[in-house]
Every structure is written in C-alpha cells, then in structure tokens.
Image (cartoon, rainbow, N blue to C red; front, side, top):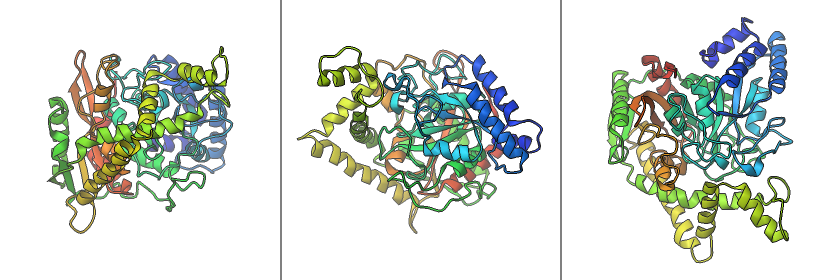
Length: 488
C-alpha cells in the first residue's frame, strides 16, 4: 500500500478497501521504524484524529481526491498542534496558534498530517546538514546528503515514509532534493502558493510546492495548495485551475530548449549522460531539441547570494528573544539579551547570511551590491523571456540538469560554504526569474564512495505554464520507469 501513487491510494480509500486510519497507521509505523532523521515531530493521536475525520467524510460521500491521503509538512509551515521549528534552536519548542494557508488548504481537502519533516535551518542550505536537529540521510545511500533545504520532504517520499510532502523553494530547494532523492517535485510560478504561515527566508524568492512520486501526484497536490490569499501581499489573483488537465497531450512538435550554459565545465559526466539520455527519450516521444543560450546563468550565484541574505537579514530580525523563540538564560541588559539570544539560537549558516545581508544593505554598499544585483536579476529574467515568450520564442520548455553532481557524502562540504552554494547553479536563475520549474528522476550516477545515486532532469516553463510542465513530465514517466525505482 505504501508504494501506491496518490491517485491509486484515493481509489482504495473511496472504494473502502482501506480506511484513512489504517493507512495513516501504516505510514506512522514506517516512520517509527526509520533511522533517516526525516521527521522532527510526530503525534500519533493528532494524526489518527484527522484520519477518523477523513473516514467520516468518506463514509458520508463528502470526499475529494485527497481525502484521507497522508501527507508530511516541511517544518517551515506553521501548524497547530505540531511543533514548528524551521530546523532551528531558535524555535525549538514553538507551537503555532494557527495553521499556514497551505496547511489549511490541505486540511480542507481532507488530507491527514503525518508530522513535520526536517529541513535546513530557516531553509538555508543545499544538503540538509544545517538543521539544528541533525542531518537527514539520503535513503538511496545513507552516507549521502538528501539535498536541501527540503531534504526531509524528499527523503520521506523516497523512503515511502509519506506518499507526498510539502516543500519550499527559494533557490532550488524543491527541485534539488527531489533530484538527489529520485522523486518528483515542482516549484510553481512565484505568487501561486500563499506564503502566509510559511516562515520567511527571502520574501521575493520563497515559494511553496509539492514533492511526490509522480507528476500526476504533484498536479493533484498543486490543485489543493494554489490560490489567492488576501493575507499574503505577494499572492496572485488567478482563478483556480486543474493542473492535470493536459497530462495526456501528445509531445509531438514540442520544442525543448537546451541551454549550452547548463552543460559546461563543472557538470559531472555521469549526470550529463543521464540527462542526455532523457533528452533522447523526449525526441522519441516527438519533441525537438533546440540549442539555446542563457548567458547570465553564471551570474545567478552572486546575484542570489546578495539578494537572499539581504532579505533574510530583514526577515530574521524578528527573532530577538522577546516575543517568542529562544531567549538566553543569562544576560545583563536588553541589548545583551538580544545578542546572546540570537548568538545561541541561530546556527552558523544563518549567522553567515544575516551578516552578509546586513553588509550589502548598509550605507555605502546598498547601491553597489543590492541594487546592482536587482538589475542583473532583471537581465536573467529577460534571458528566459527571449527563449520562452513572444512570436519569436525559441522553445516551449527548457531542460537540463538540476544539480551538477549526484548527492555528495555527508560532511564533505560542511566546511566549504561556497561549494554548497555552487550545487544550486542550475536552479537559482529560475527562482530569480520567478518561473515554474520541476525535477523528475531520469537515471543514476555513481557516488564517490558507495553505490548509485539518483539524477534529476530539470524542466522549466514560462509563467503559469505548470500544466504543460506536468504534461511533459507525465509523458516521460509513462515511457520510462525511473520514478518507480525505490531504495532498498
């Protein structure tokens, strides 16, 4: 039962072949037996109470496609009843009095919360090694990182500890862990998913999205979690849509842009081989490959690591030990309390980004760094628009690798922050432009020390083109079985 897709589970539930309570218990037992450190907070009583409510809806013929489906939430979305820590000591025992909009939407759809999954502290990281509660292990190879910051979400789905999970993507944190764990994840167009109740890292970049086994699963999840929210000033006013409406459309005539910048120095040979093989499979499905250029790709790392830390330094200023969160036990005065509470509550990577952000926003450096980065961000977005938009557009979607290598070993990059930053080279530009992008499994590469590790194919589309991306991914998954492979 734990191997079924969301659609298959929904059919089992609606046919009353299994109850929501039985299904939730099955996954709770799997979580309890796991040693991946994927979950931070599980409460069996709360979960089973939601499951019994879902069973009542199923019995009363008041069920939707997600009613009774167990789901895990990234520990960046606030939840009533379950702790919300953002992977930080700063919020170690925090329990929110309200649900994030995303959590609220899934509750309304009848899903059952399995618990909160681990993540890099305040979503800052590429390997899930920055969590105060310890790193998540990659289920394909427990010596490896699962990717980050949504490593707990991706690992939980890959290990079949949950059929699906929520995640967030600031610079690639849905796509990159999905790739390294061999699952499917999609970051929708910026503004499509409400950020209300999602603990902020970088407000102009943060975007929620789903991780599941298949493209069809992700479409079902997006149907529930998107929509306008007046409580979020960046939420887009667009009508609800069925993201799975085009799943079965033919790919004949589809033009796939292949950026030369995604296949240069730094891309591991095993990753390139798997991605090239996937592109060949799309040609067999009727698509045409088109060589394109995204010349500002290499600038995405310096631009991102100016803008994101700047916004983080502002967003995290609220954690001061006064209203909620960690407060130092011993201090002399108010200023000393601020300093000690933040020094003790934040981890090294969070402190590093706060310092960088404060610096680039300071007097004398704002124009030289922050404003300049915003100008280049616009140029990066224009590169994509030349390729994807207008009567002279070069392609319908863009494809390439998600990450330059397979998952690296735990601890390999702990002392080299820049090496971690470089892992996001192919995902940052999409986030800076606010475009939708997704990762699907497309093969395996060789780990440095032990066994095979998954490779992900990145698919990028124009604004609000999620249905096309899901169609493209679904057709590939109908023709291949990479998404069906699972770790031992």
